Image (tube, rainbow, N blue to C red; front, side):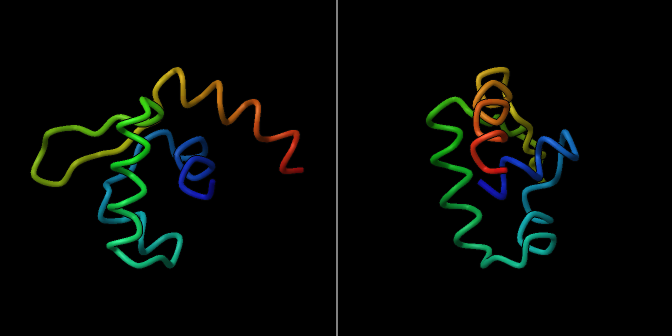
Length: 70
């Protein structure tokens, strides 16, 4: 969920920066981003340093999660 909330706040971030911001292992970030992409919740660019962003489906999910999380 922390990756989703980060993306909601920043809109877009390089995948390699997520681990630094959230203090997570790089492998954990990669694994989670792949799962989120496969589910259609985030999208990644095809650049050398891919930027990750929420899809409309991901934004809806985060909107649903925020009241529950609070």
